[in-house]
Length: 429
Image 1 (cartoon, helix red, strand yellow):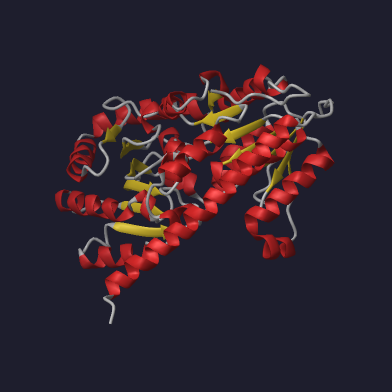
Image 2: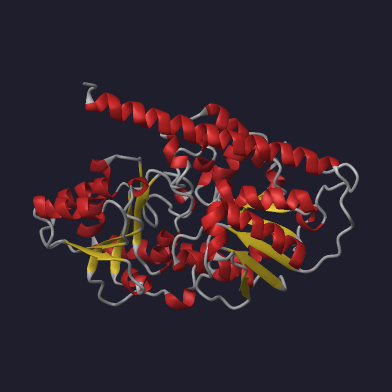
């Protein structure tokens, strides 16, 4: 009888190969479509002052953080092609496929068809997609077929490309299980065709430039925070707060181990964990097993996140990967001091030793030490709090982010992309 571990390993290998094969086919067909589209002539386009946006939006706050600055950037009409209409934002219209289409074609297929239909109906001046696969890829393909510029929102940073995207949370990509260099090369080849890549910080730009993307085709545009809803309470009831999905990419079990060690030093420690996900039950068991369930409140999904952030002293994030966390920016604007992993572009906003601390990934002892430093020194905590708030407001304020979009969407490579009506444009890099 086969060993269960051997069976499990074989099953995972088969799933990985199937996922990799499927993705390779999708990327190959996409590159073929792009190549053909660039050979065909495109009719002259009359500007409509309209843009089309598509992607997967994980929660209402995340959607608002990205949609709101677009709505204020000066474009007359903004169409969002989504699975379902999201939280209402003034100036945003939704164009949503019917449920039967999702059942027949799947989410990605249905949205791709509706992006193309929207392209013919609304004739947008440009197409914006969140995450390379499948949102930005769909936007790119339709833009190429209709002869318009496209923008890729690299929300999670280079992990959307590295290894073929196996470290992301996408349902197909996560099944890769391991990195595939050939898929990474194909993803990078596709990325070079975008007229604009909106990134979250300097490390993402460096990655793209090193892989053949012109710096002029990148723009650092973070998610926004609404300054009208952030502010710190006089008495902050939580020493530490975490906000995010309780999924492996956020490493919440590592976070609990850090909290266990800090609670041993500060028995009165009060912590709020906001969010839900597949690891919630395991986390709850850990709290009871280690006797810190009185220290840590598992609050689940909440509609008053801004209020909770304003009631917290420190924002803790142990993620394996990040772009530039909107939850962190909101926390900082509210005066919560960040103690976060040195991943992605978090250090663009967190100045180590000035307004917070960036910690080497997985360095549990270092997290614990720096949390103790802040909680044992109220004066330093207060100084860091003021600096954190100022930094986030200046970097992620909705007016600031909106101005980035205004400049980018009116830029030469978007208003006047390198599209030759008879020949097609040439890929950047």
